[in-house]
Image 1: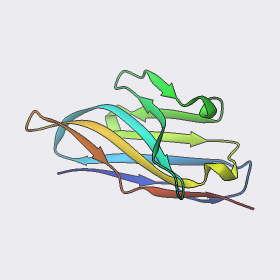
Image 2: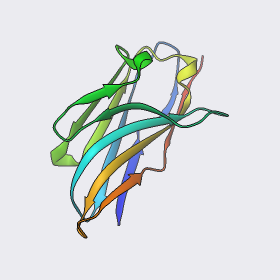
Image 3: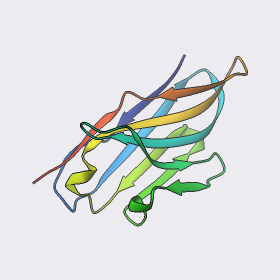
Image 4: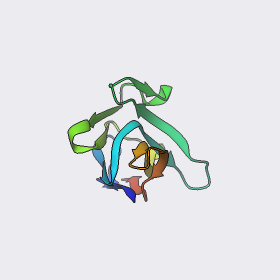
Length: 120
């Protein structure tokens, strides 16, 4: 079994910051791409940012300059630093990883999600 566990969500005022973390555990060789998605109420899940195992990064346009994705391969953890948060950033944030399982198969694994609420 491979698990991704997110943490760091919560209530923050507009203009504030949060840092989300997502740690992988279980039996696997490595993790390729790791990504953050979010799903706002009544909307579809959307990609926020992605990072490859060698550090190449892709952001949605509206995140550039506000959100920063990073990872620590030694800790099998991906982070999302979110600054200048807006009410429209309110959503459940999900971590996603492409994991090379011990069976030599690639698995797409999702975390359970962490709620971010931006409100005064």
